[in-house]
Length: 388
Image (cartoon, rainbow, N blue to C red):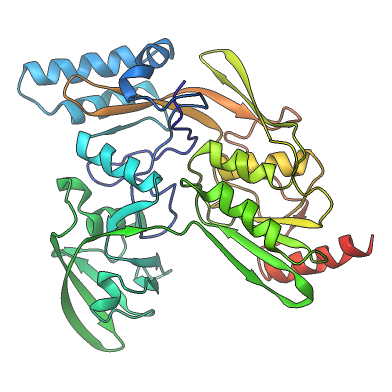
């Protein structure tokens, strides 16, 4: 098995419009799931045999080969084959897109450095601007509204499509290429031309609240996230509880989620999974902090590897889970190289929590339901846990 370990996979809706699942923001589009833990990092071609056993890889590969022979687009033909198969999480990437995806999982991405969300009226509002990014250097501010990207209107579009336009996914656009943004600030409309840049990702942030409570937010499970969580736990005040904020975390590398689980567990089962019917298990390392009060905060944007971590902490009685039901993405994908060099990520199995609960299509139900004032509720729960 490959060492590129993922559970999170976008489903493509047309060229260049991948769902943002690893990074639930306008930072990155098109992160995928892949293979499960193993000793070595391998290429997609190394897992082709396992994917073929999943039942529909051959159909996808044949569709791509036939398209090549007739002068059509192999990627589009493969996408149609994936759609016909009913594989909800299957996806096809051009060679360039897949390279960008792997770089993103290593903690880097090509973009302009802004986060955004769609308002109820369809307006796309900037919610955060990364310091030192092209967006910041151009003077874009939080609260600005994005009207267009390279002439394409974005009002009313899903944020995931806006992400693809900003990144230039449809054209495999590299760093250094320009992108023209149409914006509004108050009543003023203006245009800015930025140049996309290679930016790094900080998936784990830490802050302290009153009473020694430490909030560890994991935005995504990119490389190094698990060790960052363990470091944060070691540095947290000894007498204080921890809030593990997984809201909006759409997954990433499963090995990183298991490492994060190891920060709070003293070994034991984290999850089980199957690959083409072959049952496997993931275990935490020994030596985690098992005595400190812990609350995990989740929402509908908590997905995949983040759900795996949440389920492990909940089933093992290690954390109280607060928030709303998680997304319910518990399927396993693996990559394989198609004849033209593109990559198909196809579903080969599913994972379960330590107690045997299936996550796919169901999600994880919090111990305490809360959709507002979630951090405040978490603090209240921690104070109770501390008293006990």
